[in-house]
Length: 89
Image (cartoon, one colour):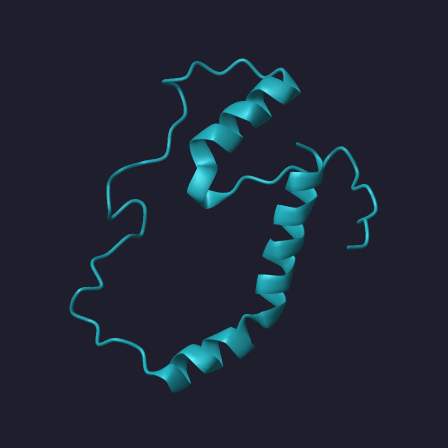
């Protein structure tokens, strides 16, 4: 696999699935001193723009195929970010 060029130090990736860990690491790395209870992700579904999708019918295979093509560049970018993070561990 080809090695990706180094990114500037100003680049930081906060992954949604690891937000608390990534955010804490970011604060530690930058030397910012926020109290752990000072800034947090809300758990309120309305404020977080979260909803229950239980009443939405499942996607067809055609819909999944369309979404994979529509978000193809996003998937490549996210994959690049994961590889970049793995190289720094």
